[in-house]
Every structure is written in C-alpha cells, then in structure tokens.
Length: 323
Image (cartoon, rainbow, N blue to C red; front, side, top):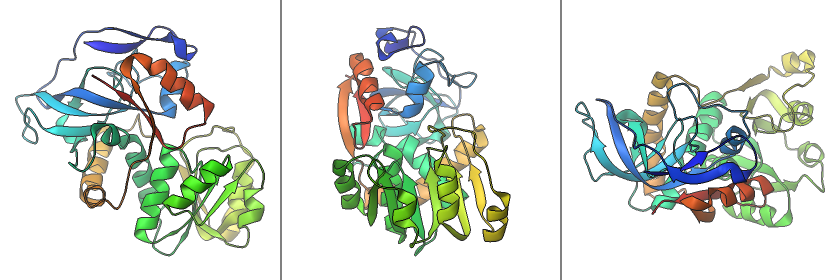
C-alpha cells in the first residue's frame, strides 16, 4: 500500500510517500480502506521526535484518525461487514491507504458527513468529550473557557458546550479567528495578542477551563475560576512547569486535572467509544454539530499539511484525502 513514511525526525520534508506492507488483521479487527485522514498537532510533535507511538502501533506512519470503508473483517467481528462506512480514532498509521482497527473502536460514519468531515472528528470528539464533559463535568448554564478556540479542539469544544447550554468564551490569535468562533457560538473571543484574557473575563467568572497552553496561563486560569471550578489540561505548548499557589486551590475548592489519550488502555478507549456512540453521534446525525474544515491535501502532500499546521494560520481541521 502507499503510505506517508516518517524517514527521520525533523522538518515537514522528512514525510515522504512510499510503499509499506498492508496491515494484517486479527480476529477482532477490521481493515479500513482509508478515504481521508485527519492531521493533528500530536502528529507534528511525533514528526519532530518527541511523541513516539504506543507499542504495537506503526512508528514510521503518522495519523491518529481516519474515515473509510471496511475492506476486510476478522473471524470474530460481529459489528461490521465489508462495505460499511466507518470512522475511527487510531493509535497511529493513518497516513496510509489501509489501517487496522479493533472492531470496538470504530464508529459508523453518518451519511450526512463526507469522508473528509468524518476523518476530522475522532481526535477532537474523544478529547473534548473525555476532558470537558466527563473529567471537567461541564453543566448547562455554566461558564466555559477554551483556549485556542479556532483549533480543531476549540471548534469542537465550542459547539458541544453550546449544544448543552453552557456559556462559551475563548481565546484566539487574530480578528478573522474571532469572527469564526463567534459564528460558532462563543460569546466573547479574546485576541490574546491584543488583550489580556484574564482582564477581559475577570468579571464573568469561569466554571470550567480547557487549556492546551500551560505556562503563564496557569495562574490566570486559577484566578478566573469560580469556587468549585475545574481546570483541565490537554497539552502544555507554553510550558509544562508552573508555580502553584495551593491556598488559592484550597480556598476556592478547585480541581486541577488533565489527561492524554493516545496511551490510554484499550478498556478506556472502548468505553469512551461507546459513550460517543450513544451521546455524540445523534448530534452529528441531526446536524447540531458541524465539522469545520480549513484545508485538504492529497496524501502525497502531507508535508504541506504539516507546514500549514505549524503556521497556526488555519481555522478548523486539516485533512489528507486518500485516492
């Protein structure tokens, strides 16, 4: 099969289209003929050599989410048949013509969505549902702040939070991104290059914060949170080490937590998949939530997709199309 191969760690140019052996499937697996694969920030980090794939996953093929058609099924598979259209979160190997997936980690692709749209969803849906609604326990009527509102994570978080009836606030890097996230439902979008989000939002009070920045955002987040507020980390792009004032945490009874998804055990991912099948898929089918696609590239131009990702100029998801 054709696949984008990580020839060495480094710049986007290390991603080269080549030939790899088609994955073999086990008794409980399905083989997906990939139609589209999402591009995510962790792919960039892995390309640079800082985020190895879990044991058992391809180390030289990036890609954490795909959509496509079931090509073959293992002998114990009962959920799927050849020809079914599916999308799935995977541990790696998505930048390729075929991927192997455990049958319980695939979801039915809604007919309302294209393969490109479906491929843009798994990484963000799983991350947001797990961290905002399960770990962060966001409730209707609460105030929710998500940093990086124009990213795939941000766009997903804004829409899902609005659907349940939360008040949504976010930070972005320019006026174009401000307009885009407000159109999705954000009540206030702070341009962090021009304003201090802590000053803009200090009179509002926030119940749940989803942060992928870390660094000097930490103390501002703590100050913004209401009593019993929840601060959830999913990345630390601005720095992983912070100084914590424990008295503020105790006095306001705050919860500071976080998670990573890729290395989680199979049982967790299976249960999260079932939760999304039950609670989120109906929203997609009914059109309450809509993927936002910034750009698509052919598989052979994965390097250009990574260049766009690293520029941070995108609004929404970047997707590779596999023909």
